[in-house]
Length: 347
Image (cartoon, rainbow, N blue to C red):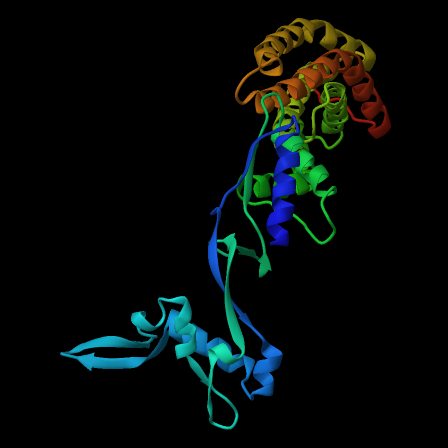
């Protein structure tokens, strides 16, 4: 009963929160229940054990498997259960007896009583604990991460001793969010190794990797400015941002390396590379930005997920494009000076 009271209070608060919608109990409504109240102290005084009481009720009203027997060449199972005529009325409880430790039969109505009540028609448990299944959706304009945060905030207003566990897509989103940092680290390592194989150098890819935080900074900044949360959709946009920023850096580094290997001075080579690749970088970045802009300003159903991706990509594109033009040459020159990379002679 207390669990159902807390659930009702939780649903009232959740449905009044603007970040949530259609929050409801995914289960059966309360139904009339016939409650058997056993006075275990009185039963023990009569020599009746709790185990015998529970076993008798289980067999009488639920049945119990006995054994198998052969019937015309087929194996059939034998179950024992109380007759339907002896377990259909409230007064039938007096017909059932339990044997005590002296071998005497004690009637149930000697230590138990029956009352009518109201409660859940089905008992729900999660990890062997009484639980209720609640479902809901993010309100239009809010992401799933914001909705999950709203649920956790409402839980703090509930009495002590109650907790929540996510399931289905919410569980997967939370699990994926907890693994985001290691996955990003592995992704950067794979990108670094691929660039090292492309340029046949361990130092040049560092100039590309160092630019990635510039795009991430823009994605985080615009997401925080618009009040968005770090959810799975934001993380998808963040991965897209990393790819865009790395692409811009590769365009500059590729030309700078070729010009430097052809005999130009290091500083002259990188300046010439920026000049030659500025237009392609701006054209591709602006086109990409215009493509994701509708996502950033999306409204209606699914707008939370669309805007989360669009805002992250748009913020990362802005900083990644304009800062990349200035910082990639700096990183390229510094890395070459620190590691002392030699020119590759052209045949």
